[in-house]
Length: 344
Image 1: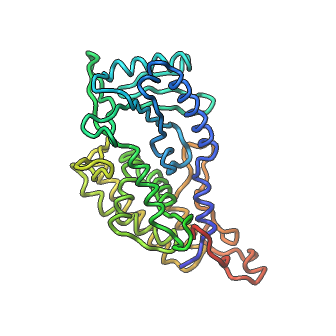
Image 2: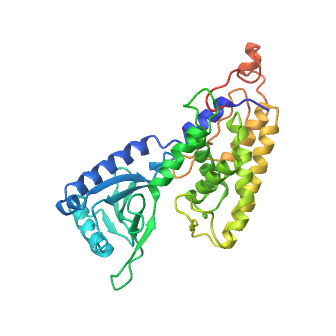
Image 3: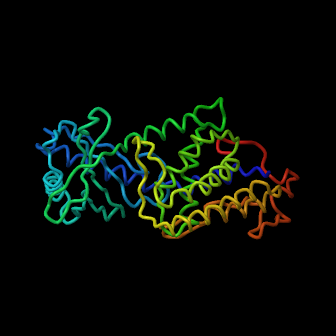
């Protein structure tokens, strides 16, 4: 197996949000300040929390939307979703004129300068589990009536943090968590190989279950990818009618917009991706292996200029051959750089 640690490290760097992360943080700050300045929301105990892939640190370039979970910690069962959404819309329209859109269960604020939006999701303590679960508005009907539905997005953030502590590339290094980097790469593979649905969160949940059930103990990212992709491909056909178990709520499953046909197509494509990952892992020639990994991870998307996520080592040609005047041959060093790093 070729040692391509530096290329995997570079691949993770290329899909890191970077500037988007800074913009998302600033947008979240501005929205939170506007919400906390309102007297009614203050009395309702407004407390915001970043949810979604950005909040869990598993987002990949580009971040187009940020989800803010606006918890009304002192709200009672008398709080009506339609009424509070109307109020939050008014508060945000005053703070961000002409940039606010009321949605079925949230309020969206556009930040044109950042090329992203913020979705504010209002939540009240769950009537049945007020200490650790929340309720958010269901879809509001044409007559303005609505109900609340139970959710627990903060739990997914906690599970993600715990999984990244449990699965380490180096048992002696508490900072070598592999779960979060793997979820990022799985999301990139999904973007490359799956047309549209199921979405990124659906695949994140599948990856979570794969880690929990298999308890993989590989020593490299290259070793993890075919294992997790293979498990996801094997699981997908089981969810034609009902999605995977929701790890944040008992007796619930993950919903998706995907049709049975789309799930079947995704299963076939991810099976192909898993097969390619296995082939790349077994390939002993580092340049040929690098080309296979490059094909697996594809290119960055939604960026001004797309580029391959997985860079070829400087001693490799695009066709997988070794440059005759490459660094390794000129210096008389091994064809593959020696040494491991955190994401080997």
